[in-house]
Length: 128
Image: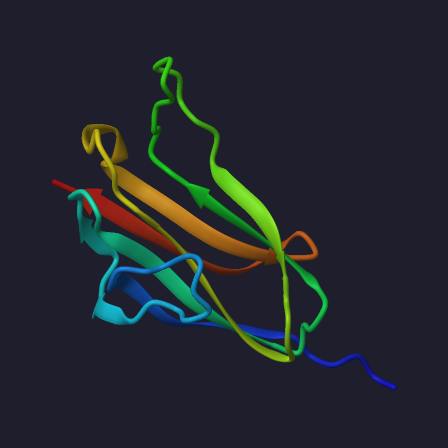
C-alpha cells in the first residue's frame, strides 16, 4: 500500500485576536500581514493545515531577533515538538509581545518541520 502524501499549507498568517493557549479554539485572524507593529499584547503568527500526518511529530521553531533573558543574555529560539492529532489538523504557531518591547523589534522567523524538512515558514518584521 503506498504511503499517504502529507500536505502542509499555511491557511492564515499575520495579526490575530487574543488567543487563549489553553483553549481548543485557534485564534481568529484580524489582518493578513508580515509587518507587525510591536506593542505589548499583539498576537501574530500563522495557522497551518496539516493533512495526512496523523501521529507524526511536527517540530516548530520561532527564531526571534535577540530577546534577552533576565541576565541580559540572548535567549535561544523558542522551539519544540507537537504530535499531529488527526488526518486533517490545524496548528497555530505564534507569539505575543511583552515588555520590554525594544528587544522584540526585527525579523521573527517561524517554521514547522517534518522529518527534518521545513514544510511551512513565515518571517514577520516587528517595527515600532
